[in-house]
Amino acid sequence: MSAALHLAKPDDLDRLTALVAAFHAEQGIDQTDAAREAGLAPLLEGIPHGAAYLIGPARAPIGYVIVTFGWSVEFGGMDAFIDELYLRRAVRRRGIATEVLISLPKALGDAGVKGLHLEVDREDEAAQRLYARAGFRARERYMLMSRKL
Image (cartoon, rainbow, N blue to C red; front, side, top):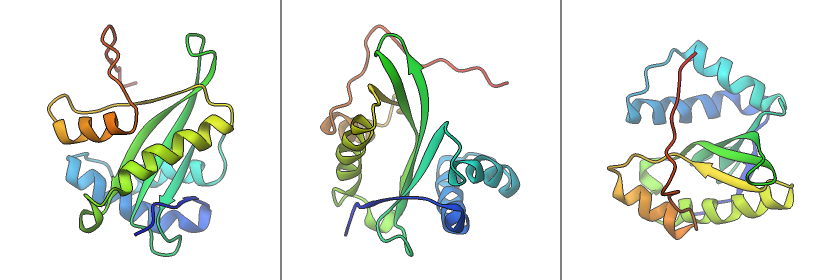
């Protein structure tokens, strides 16, 4: 099974939407299809604030990763946030997510990104181990805080 990343394009909206809906169902994220598509379509059309990648064969992807971009004085320039990472259940635990989490930072670094962040459930030890294997570390003095607008 390949962890190849393919930048998603407008023609991929239906494939990506189905994968995102599956992830949201697993995570208990309540969102309408219209809201989901409104969040995805600009990424596929080239908005500069983020990108969506399909994982695996472009015509039959096995997952996706969405990256958003920001700016960090602390990190010395552009930084990125893994907003969502999902693999179909049938292909999990085969090292694919680890491959993605190792290849994605290399590609982003080559494009000038200085730091890559992600959010993980404090109680999901398996996910924490996965991210640690890929070089992510908890920032002891910091925690993510959010405000919905």
